[in-house]
Image 1 (tube, rainbow, N blue to C red):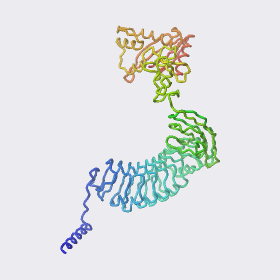
Image 2: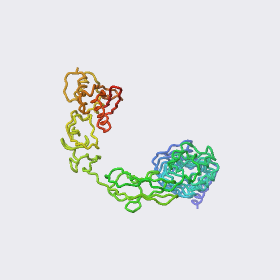
Image 3: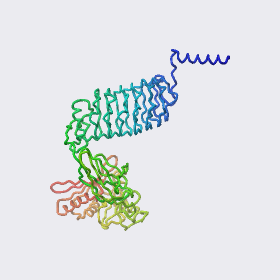
Image 4: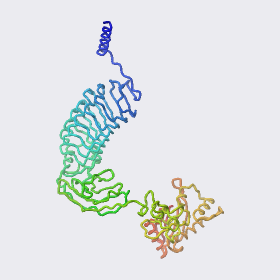
Amino acid sequence: MVQFHQAALVYWVVALLCFSTFPVVRGQCPDVCACTGATDTVDCTGAGLDAVPSDVAPDTKILIMTSNYLSHLAPGSFAVYGELEMLILDDNFLATIPLDVLDNNLTKLTHLSLDGNPFSSISDGVFDNLAPLEELTIERTSLTTLAAGVFQGLTALKTLEMDENQFSELPPDLLIHIPQIEFLSLAGNQLMGLPDGIFANATELTHLDLRDNPWSCDCYFGWIGPFLQANPGVLFADEETVCLWPPSHRNTPISSVPSNESNCCATTLLEGPQNTTTLSERTLTLTCLIDGAPFPNVTWLKDDSVLEYSNRVHLELFNASLVFEDVLLEDAGEYQCRASNEEGSLVESGIATLIVNEVTCFDGVLSSHETDTDCGGIFCIPCNESQSCLLDGDCAGDLVCLYTHQLLSQLHYISPQNDMAYTCAQPAVPSQLLQELALSSLSIGAAGTSLLVEQLLGINYTHFALNMSQVQSTLHSLLAEQLEVPTTAISSVQVTTVERLSKPLLQVWVEIPKTKGGEEAHSNVVRQVDGGQLRATVRVTEDYSRYRVRMNF
């Protein structure tokens, strides 16, 4: 009996404490969080949490859970936080919000931020119990649309920020339940248009941000111009909010496009795909050019079946052409482009055949694991001296790819489009010489000149006092050989070095008189520059008597 009375006494003492007017004892700050104002603000940013800490004080007013690992919120997760005014759940892993998470105990919550979560949808009713909420941000998510009643119950909402989502369409009744909305931002989405009347109930709207959307200013979106003109100053960054389609209105501010039925037209096919042969592991585009407003719905068929798009095989915005980011052998087949819009009937292209060949040592194309030629069979071993080549990289060791009668390698770049026969050979001067000079810290003086000549000509000069004129004289002969003209067609060659970005730049000046031979030399310079055969930055100028050619190596 004594034990009973003792238990009863404890019960009543606890009850009196709970319901007395004594001040509430504040909780402690969680170890992994930072707190201010005792526990008024609890900041758990980047704390590596997968749930709200159990020791967050019930009287917390601001709770920040940014950059954690929240992937699921249990029912009633915030039920004990009746004093909460601001809740920030940015940059977590929440794919959804259960209906019973934001319950009716959050009677003081005015700010909710859900940015940077991988939401694919938000259900109707999620925000029904948040009548006091004044500011809601849902940015940088995977949302493509919203249900019409998702904001039902948010009768006090004044600010709604939904930038940088994936919205491609929004329901016409989206704002009907938030008549007090003043600030609405939909920047950086994929919206081509908005339904007429979406702002009809938003009579308090003073700030509207619609930038960075691919607006299609056709007749179905023609209402936006008159609406904005009737509400001047509402649209933020008017001049930056422009049409992307149709081409006749591209880069025109959406506020300037008149409501006009002529802004719509039926789909027409301008160009269809062609038969194509390609290699695997390449990027490829099958062309389908169309016109029409609104921009037509585009479907590609492969072997008579509708093709499903992916990150690898996709369409680009306002473009019906099919893009392959990485062609696979199984992409081979017959392709057809079809398109239609609300203004006319379906149009379709002819059928194009795509042939995909596997990348091998025998494909004649340079890739990351092989050379251009087949000297090494399936192992793509670099080619030895006298074997055929297309690029210097085909050749083993210090060999370079040269036309049979060419003298200079570093003044001669082999174009893959050139049909002449090239073979791997010993270069007249060391390969990559000019690149090495550009990277070296060589200062041209007496000793430097000797070293320069030794490297350029492969001759061991032992006298440091060698005159630069000998270098220039030798280059004179070599350049004449390169340009296929007599030495008399080149009046002078000057070699200098220029300090550029702390690295020496080899500069060769060539003067060519306007004689018969000089005109031929000039033509050969132009031809070799256009053909990519001079491995240098070349500039050609002229006056009444001569051409001046500057080559930077």
